Amino acid sequence: MRYTIYSILAVTVLMSSTAGTQQVLSATTVKSSIPATATTATTGSVGFLPAVFSLLLNTTVDTEIVAEGYNLFAPLSDTTTYLMDNDGNTVHTWASSYTPGHAVYLLENGQLLHTGKADNTTFEGGGAGGIVETIDWDGTVTWEYSYSSSEHLQHHDTVMLPSGNFLLIAWQYKTRTEALDAGRNPSLLTEAKLWPDSVIEVEPTGVTTGNIVWEWHVWDHLIQDYDATKDNYGTVADHPELVDLNYVQNGTADWTHINAIKYSEDFDQILVSVRNLSEIWVIDHSTTTAEAAGHSGGNSGKGGDLLYRWGNPAVYGAGDSTDQQLFVQHDAEWIEAGSPGEGNILIFNNGTGRSDGDYSSIVEIEPPVDASGNYTLASGESYGPSAPTWTYTAATPTDFYANRISGQQRQSNGNTLICNGPDGYFFEVNSNGETVWEYDYGNRVFRVERYPFAYSGFDGTDLDDE
Image (tube, rainbow, N blue to C red; front, side):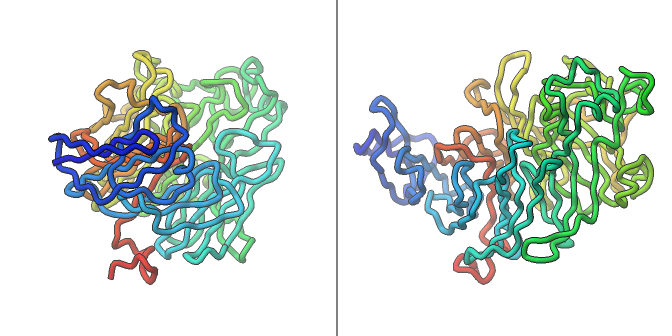
């Protein structure tokens, strides 16, 4: 029997339906500022989160088929990060001096990895950060690193490597002169500057210090067919390993807008989501910094050139708009070992600009990679696959649309946890696309991450399952 509590302001009525099996653990209705015409379904107990003051929270739990664990998220307008159980109860919080910039993670050592938004007036784009910090379970900041200046700014995401170092996404500032010297078409340089992306690896050396021990810059891997006087002039379609400086989806300084980064220890490779080109890229991390700036070296023998790309083959001259499959996507990630689809790539396809209307989807693709991390590309063709292996959309596709931020995470039971970021709405679907859990926070959230009860980050805390 499925039980749902419908709440209008402070009025609560218990209803029942036969659409599945639900367990109502408890229910709390909080006075809401939602107009009286609005209704919100609430199942489970509502945690004491800030949103309850202005929004009626919604938690629905199907205890038989929901992936167990705790949900981590950081509202973009809040300096507090929340850990919440599947019933909507807050079980732990961390305070920071910064609002997120944007990602947060719970590390295996129990510390919170938190990006923070610095005061930087040079780079004022979406996802601006500048601070990466770690905070222990008791709230002590154990490391706070700033990568923010008039020349560069960390943004969106970060990842901790097995070595204990951190990979950061960062913008680098290029003047109009530097852009034109690289072969940029001046008609595409509407803001007289560019912010090409880079990836840096930082080794913590003290509470507020770190050494940059490796770096990669898209600026070192350009091709263009506009200015024949430049060294990088060539036929774009002949160089899928390079990035066309004059392919743009908008004319802003934030040309590529990488918004997610992940690391594969098996291949020593990095996966990034390149929103403003509607592509994902894979690059080699096994290189030295010198090799990463060139076209040879590392496990791949290709230096810092792209090993794989997918989503919009028109960017490298291997297709046109009819071949585009990603549309300003977010949160590309390898599915972790032990979860169905492990090794495949899962992507939040925001869906702005589709020919059949704007709507979002979650896509899972199986990249054409061998056991050694080499990717297959037939001459003159685009990178496969030709279609995703699994896709989630709403029954009426336009009912699910997040035009920015957002993400997803595959669970060990095969379900997929999804975050509609602009709405702060989290929901979990099974492999058939059926919703088995939902929670409405009601304010902007970059992503939500779920950690199982046995996760090592809980060892020795009050949430230790042993």
